[in-house]
Image 1 (tube, rainbow, N blue to C red):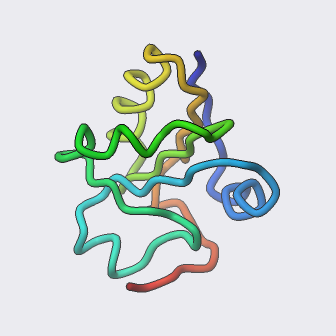
Image 2 (image 1 turned 30 degrees about the vertical axis):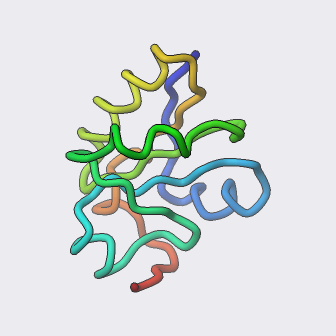
Length: 101
C-alpha cells in the first residue's frame, strides 16, 4: 500500500486519535528501558512470528533505534498491502513521554 514518515513529535498524538498499531521493533531490552506509550514490542529479528497481529488496523507505525530498520521493514509491509508510517530518526529523535516495562 504505502510507506510514509511521521515525525517523532507527532507519534504520540497520532496514536491517541487514530486506529493504529504502534510497533517498537527494537530488542526486548531496549523496549523495556523506555518506549513510546502504547507501543507493542515485536523485535525485528523475530517479526515474522507476530505477523498475525497486524490485521484490523488502519495503519502501522514502526519505530526502531534510528529509523533505518523500521524503513526496511516498512517497505516490506507496504509491499504486502499495509499502510505504514516510519518514525523519522527512530527513538534517538523521539523526545516525548516514555513508558518503561
